Image (cartoon, rainbow over all chains, first blue to last red; front, side, top):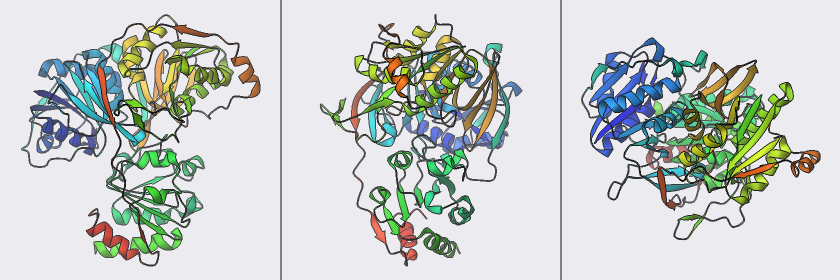
Length: 318
Length: 245
């Protein structure tokens, strides 16, 4: 089986979620080719091989430098034709979802996003996907000859035992109709661990009492090497930026460890974190509903518990 | 400006999720249905745009007769008329196909919907509609301003946002903080009863996926409580039991 993987580049490197997509594709079995757009060195791209790709197609044309959804979908359709791929794999993301949708129409493919496990190919091609914001799963048969799979974050383990992949330039004859949207600028948090991709997340809620107290959340996150998040009321009150809002209508995270500080655990917040492997809840209210969803809990004043926890983590690291 | 807002009819966010008939059907017992929360943002922004510069708002749902109260609520919030495509929403492609078919003769400047439904969470219908209609599509859109025939938008990306411009027509998948949710007032509720709600039959029956069974996640174990004066026990458990440190 020939599989094409759309990989996203950030700061010249392959994003973690895209490495997961490559390893997922390798797990299906077959010949895995990755395709990347924008600025990245051959060395950075050949790292796709360690995760399981044999070849990387690189679209370096300036026109494809920024994440133009329509243009990427057209280029991917050309790459599907060129490689004879039956299956396309990508990470579920703010770029992956819209690109996969347009591609599905272009190539007449079945599409499933939010996929959490390798497909069952014993009788057709069935994938398991997360639904009801993580509260359930659906087993879905992809019935078309071509299929596209969007992998939920942290649903696949990155392989690291492959060899470097060969990198080849891939040119696309650009269609002006694909360039009707102009990206005028980007505003991206730099030097931080990106919340949607983080393995460890520390989130704060109204229990922090104000934005001036966020230093202790950041200190704990720094000691852990974690990303920071917040509950909806916190972002609504502008204590923290919207891109840190974790929950049903914000960012949905799936880290190995989620630490919630001063968050009572409204069902809309739980919907954004229920794919976490382990949950720690720190709250002074013993009746906080979040404790029911937690693996570990501490009833106590965040202003006393969190600094102690930070020191204990630092001591462990030393 | 003519705006089409596509809404989903979904279980309330607090609903208990369960399945029946050998895990092949969603259990609707005691479930309240609402306009999809992301679609609510799209509708609210459409109402604001209409208040600013006039025009009309048509709201559309692909669903059977039971979704009409949800459409009436959208009319009460400020839509002028409604279309119900009389079909159970079978998969993303089916829904997108119905929306595109209903929209293609409408001459809409904007087709707005939520970034995803909160039941099936696919996040792809808006872009499928864009591709089917040959229009640019963007999602998830956090801000939208219209100046003449040009739209200026902000789109959320991982760890930040990007600013974009494009000429209308456009298909957009919306999310907060694009607008403040609107709650229907009594006048809106009264007038919604008399606004047109047109039922059309589906364009065709094509699907590209087939749902076989549902599954629930494995039951969670009991929480292990740790004394607030003994945080080192938590660190020990995270390191040696959970093995996450």
